[in-house]
Length: 438
Image (cartoon, rainbow, N blue to C red; front, side):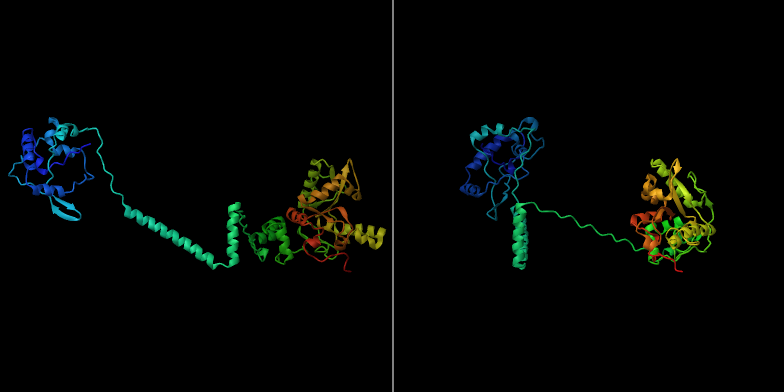
């Protein structure tokens, strides 16, 4: 498409009357001297700038616009005496003054002036693409290339510094990784060290207070439970705990450890509630409640009735009992009966139990009954242990007695059962007591 030549500054006149005069001036100037043509020929025909819009053509050629679009200002009419402004143009880096380009004189272009200068008000202005900023892009690419080169060079230098074996291993590892997915090892589990126990459990306020008021079960719990209490006693970290105190559930009584005092008698002896009592024996209140709990559990489990054959026996009563056994067995009586002052029955914490099914059986019959099996498996759950077990005679000095139960409280009984102990002497790391000292 032919392109209209840019209008000169002097062509900004308005009104229809100015059009003929302008055309005549154009023709007269077209025949002017050769110097003007030469200068015009050297002037570069510049591209329109970024701010170029079609509206600028309408301003430069107002005579070609419709009447409603022509400017209304009274602009001065150019005359031949008005000097033309010579714009400066930059040609090949030098400034030189050039005259305004010649107006369009083509009849074909003049005929199409109305069509060319017809402005579509709804059209979007034409914006020319700006030159790409190659310099900045080249700088970014160069920076990235430099960084990549530095990284590759660092990796190569590191590989060169490794021994040959390690480089070979690294190559093999790389080939392996391409062949199969890497194996992810589990993170190591941190080891949590248990804080060391208190050097002296008796310095713990709750332990000291419970021991002072005679609340044994609370003292054991405050020490950290049955096993923690046992460990403290064994390691000599419990100076307030006396295993020879006959009033405590943790007391140990055997052939070398008598009652203290020798004729000790506990207080608050009661009959176990809901338990058949064969000989009318009593127990310490805490032991009585524990035996009632054991008998109830056996009955609820459907194994039958458990009855109390013998409970507390005083020092005087034990004299008669041991005398009868000694009269029958002689020195062998020491394996089945304790001498006065050395029997756990004197503590009020021991119970001889039998199985009943209507009538009650004997002590020796208990082990073969469902009640005897239940006692062996579940007595610890109620604070009881079987005091004299099979295989413990060298330590305790007594033959096995499945019917002889000893109350030590739920916490210690649990530790005793879970530890797999077979005697209180071993439980508290005491010397065996197979025989009397005198």
